[in-house]
Length: 118
Image (cartoon, rainbow, N blue to C red):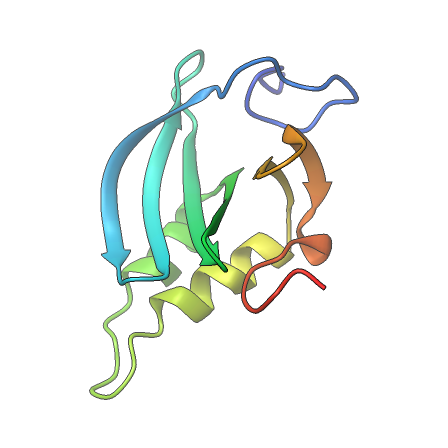
């Protein structure tokens, strides 16, 4: 059975079910981290992006293969962990913390992951 707190439902969450575990990468505009569900312990990806001083944050449960993708070594020029995180999020329905509307489940393809939200 899927956890009713950390997997998408029709119900809007009242509070965030995920607690931070560790930061994977952090620059001035993006953060990638790992979190876990406070209710079932499911591992989740956390991705945050600063868009014109608004913080958009996303969480989605991930499996072992997705965790391994996040752990792959970066290239010499650009850290690829940010692109990997965006790719994983776009493949899921994610819990979004919207700067205006608060928490809600949305398709990952509809997220604002980089650039302005318009």
